[in-house]
Length: 134
Image (tube, rainbow, N blue to C red; front, side, top):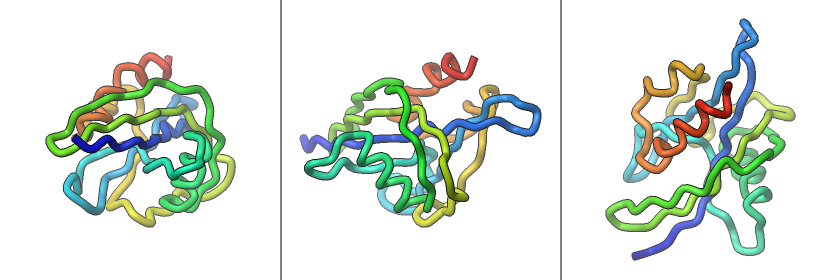
């Protein structure tokens, strides 16, 4: 089985009430089109996971982020490949989260995290993210 190594940004901010919110994106392409995920992508040769994540968010969302603490590395077997996904807390440094590759996006509160149809690997992060939002 093919092994794919990726990174994902759990971008956090605060809403107008000062409550923490998380940025979610909907895939606009490929086999898993329309599924919700945390933005990111493949690690290229010679890149650290943090470098890859900064590059991917710049390319996909035209936004510069700071990469914080590793939340977890998710290991998940899809039908045709094994995914290894390093997931990091991230903050926006500058940019407006332009959707260059995604179909849609939204900011979610802790209570809303279960309201979207997450891709299976991303869904494994939800409880850890909820804990980190407290």
